[in-house]
Every structure is written in C-alpha cells, then in structure tokens.
Length: 455
Ligand code: ASP
Image 1: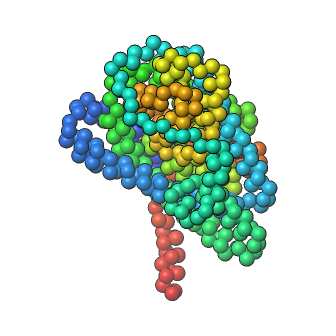
Image 2: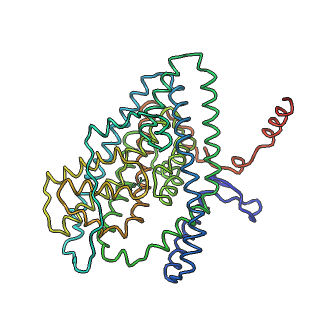
Image 3: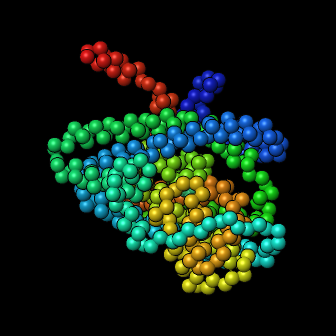
C-alpha cells in the first residue's frame, strides 16, 4: 500500500484509506449535499439539520482546533527558543521571515492589481437595484501603533484573548530568560518539551475527527450560499480566483523552487491537509496546529524555526487576503468609475501590507481590512456590499492561499538556516497519520498503571 496518511476504514478489512482522502470525501459530499439542501430550501432542514446539528458539529470541530492554538504555540515556541542552540539564529529567523512575509504579501497584491487591471472586472457594472449601506468603515492603524501593540501589558490577558503577536513576543522573552538561567532551567525545559508532545498528540486526535467536521462545515456553507449570489459579480469572482490560483501554483511554487531547490510537488502533497483545514474553517489561526504539524512532521522543518514562523505567518502574512483587497479595489474603482492612478494603487499595496500585520487570521477579517484600504484611497466603502454575498467562499480559498504562503516562507527560512531534514521532506511516508497515533499504546498504558500502583 502506498504511503499516505493511513487510518483503516471501518469495513474495508485490511485495506486502509488515508485521512487526506477521507477529508476530501467529506468535502465533496458536503458540497453536493449543501447544493441539494440549498435547492430544496426546506425550513426544517435549514433550521434543524443544517443550522442545528451540522452547525453544532462544525462549531465543535473549529472550537477544538482553536482550543489548541494558544497552548500549542506557547509550548512549541518555548521549546523552539530554548532548544535553538544559537540565540543569534532567533534574530535571523525573525528578520528573514518578517522580510519574506512582507515581500510575498506585497508581491501578491501587486500581481493581483495588475491582473485585475488587465481583465477589468466591474467595468460597465449596473448599480440599479443594488442595495448598499450598513457597512461601517474601520480607521487605518498607524505603523507605530501596530508595532507598539506587540508588547503586552498583561501576558495573561494576551493569552486569554489569543493575541498572537503578544503571545509570541512574551514567549520569546520567557524562552530567552530561561536560556540565561542555564542548567537550572533543565526541569522546566523538559516539562515544556513533554507538554509540546502532548499538544501535538491532541492535534492528531482532533485531526482524526476532520472528515466529519469538514463535512458538516462545508455542507452548512453551501446550503447557505446560493448560486444567485455569484451571478452579478461573476467577473470579480473569476478574476479573484484566477489571481489566487496564480499566486498559489506559480508565484509561491517558483519562489520555493528558486530559493530552496525543493520539489514543489512534494511540498504541495504535504501541505494539502492544512489547505483543506484552512478552506473548511476560513481561519489561518485555527489552522495553525495543522500547518505546524505539516511543516515539522511531514516536511522535516526543525521546531526552532517552525514554532516561530508558522504562528507569526498566520498572524501577519496574508497573501490571499491581500490579493482579494487588490482585486476588490480595482473592481470597485471600475464600478464607481474612479481612476486611482499609480499613487492610488501604491497606497493600496502599502495599506494592505500594513493592515495585514496587526490583524489575526480569522474568518471575514479581510473585509474589515478592505474598509481601511478603500477609505485611504477615497473609494466608497459601501461598495463592499456588492461582494459581501460571495465573500465566504472567497474567504475559504484565500485562507488556503494564506497558510500555503506561511508554509513556503517557513520552509525557505529553514532551508537557509540548514534547519530542515531533507530525508523527511522527500519521504512520502514521513509524519503520516496512522491509526497508532490515535490509539493509546498498550505498553504506555501498562507503564503508567505500574507507576500508579507504586504510589
Ligand atoms: N480568513 C482569512 C484568514 O484567516 C483572513 C481573511 O482574509 O478574511 O487567513
């Protein structure tokens, strides 16, 4: 049997079906059922089955992922910092990843704007009958405020509210202090390493529920999303999807190949589960555990690099979101017949990059950021009403692009620092989920029972 994530199917005898395949089946079944439910449009199904049961299971699944994010980032980053060997590496990893994240986001939106200017979605758009209004703009943050907010006044509050940049900052400071105390920290460091392993185990447990979780989430989305929402803005949807796919398959993969020499196909195969999680949840943040697992266990990136780059990227790097903002700006400028000019578009690029730094990767945040961008270049923010209806599906696609960008940059930085195990990267079996990962192994159980008996 070939090497993929293996978990045995219930009545398949010896034959095993990979987890990735199961999640895909869940997604496809969800799309089909969702479209059928949408056509039937029964109040009972919509309220009780989709809104009720499926909504509940989907929410539990996303909650379970989110439940992992803060403790996982804390323990893996702490072990990353304390196990780094050379503290200067931390500075280099931080600097390189920050530079690459900004550069990829700027490149993404630049290409998207050019593509949109060539295709010209929104030209001759008929605004009659379109209801606008009810959209509130958000003021753009200043660069200074964005950076000042990275230092938490109260770390407990930062952890409680999941402020990712503050958590990263605090954990790094803590890790450096632990390093300074040298051998006295041994017990604490071992405890953190152990907790990191425990958290990774919980990731595998939650991932094993993904086929059902994903099925429920996708069914719900497609039941709620009628095709009629797409028709008026089809040109926008096509341009945006094209720009997203171009970035995903061409720009990012070229960067990976040119800067690391690694095989993009292997990379794509290994990041796929994380992309599916991102697509289903529309949240880079909730996908952190899966992205982290993919780059470390499946691609061989060392935890000292991945534990920093992945949560950092999920927070500040949003290539897909920037692409959406670029295409949306051109679309709305065309709809309103406003000429933005070179300075206008450069402002859009700068704003989108800045806005992405302080905003967490959660569903729909891209639209909030879009209000800031539009406000800066004087486009009417009510125009967002036009694309609101299709935003959920676009959010799902762009989130998958966002986390792929995070993983590409993480791999590039790791390769540059010699912190990637190439044997793991090229081994298709590496880190695949097996049934053993979600079973309590008997030896471990017996060991614990003996230990408990002794006390
Ligand atoms: N949902 C996206 C993310 O979590 C952000 C957005 O574009 O709305 O990465």
